Image (cartoon, rainbow, N blue to C red; front, side, top):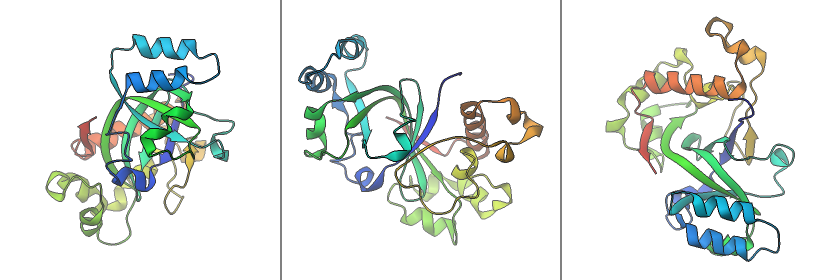
Length: 229
């Protein structure tokens, strides 16, 4: 998996708005191609790749050119992205294409704060909270994107027993960081945050993340996977 990076993007209020959530309210291939054709740049390769792809609808998200965390570390095809909301990871996806297309802003009611549009594939709706101060059951009950308490009983148990330290921060190697993620983050896992006894020292960042994600999924009996988008 050499060359693949992992990113965390803050989803914000857009995820809880059915109109603005263009991860679940997918965008047609024809709309994307039309917007690309209106750009005064050479993007024939992007257009051809999208035309030849089997999918007819795509989940789309984006980020601003003012996002300093991505200026020198921008997502590319094949990278893995977590999208978060209110202290929980809500979506997991792979980047299909990153494009510039001003005429695609209509999908966010003309909002122009995101210059770069990320076309996603293999999208999963997930629910992986950070560690929670207080009553985890009440917290999940109040979270606007929680799948419902009856479907996450094993997940609730591991947060009731935080000796396990299994949460979203553990997966991305940021156990010492507090508060919600703002903007974006390219995941890098320092050696001090790795576990030599399970071979993490010799793993790439993406291998560590996927290994920890697999452990988390198994521990919560895959209750963290809500549905395929």
